[in-house]
Length: 317
Image 1 (cartoon, rainbow, N blue to C red):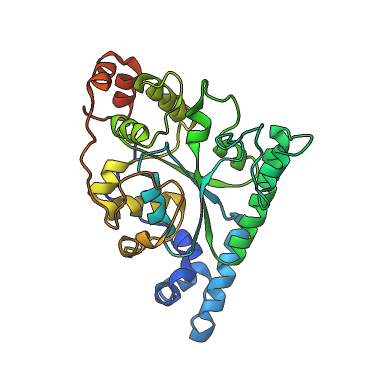
Image 2: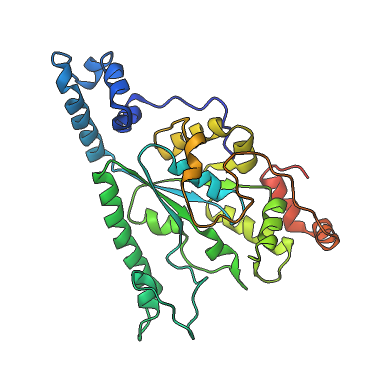
């Protein structure tokens, strides 16, 4: 399902309540008109905030705070989108997460990783099973999630799907990040895409074609596998975001259950994340397509998977 960002649904009062502390004063006014429904007394205005906090705690006891997941391929505008998410009120974002990634693994040359328990176990004298690595990751995530909830933050985890689907001669047969996290926590997920020709051109320009054969047909084959692995997750197009950033971010924030603020337009460039592969700018703006050489042009004409993917994502030429 590709999400239409126009006319996003209005958040329910209980959803607004969960997000209340980001803008306490405005919520105090709002609940002044809905006290009977929510059991809020207006006799003592000074205590209204305490009652709102109590209602939030009651709601969280019934509906645990989720972990938000953002999935995308490399060179699809994901860093820009995640910077904009990070600029929303009280968001704590972890960038490019995949505990089973082997992108930097060099068994013959262990690397210094004094703060990284997963890497330390992988490089230990006895090694570590994938099951142990997943358990280490989930235990660490539990601590991070608990801390975020205590501080009133919304935890967002950005998937490094490139490690899973675009690294090596075959797509790795192992759990996705979504499968790992959802086994232990409630989640909210979104998936972002970009025209596959643009992302492949950027991938080549950055020297990140880490699969074989290094063709756009193979790339699109892996992209289709990625979409199948995350079937049912709402899909947002990078191009729609560039055309209407506030509309798209409002809808994306609604689905992730995080508070929305128009101020992200002015704040996103402050945040520094891994994965800044593209043509950097402090502005959200359209960039012309990179040049397509003769070799790639011929590959496009012969690529079955490119045509299937473009049709699936509803992209024109």
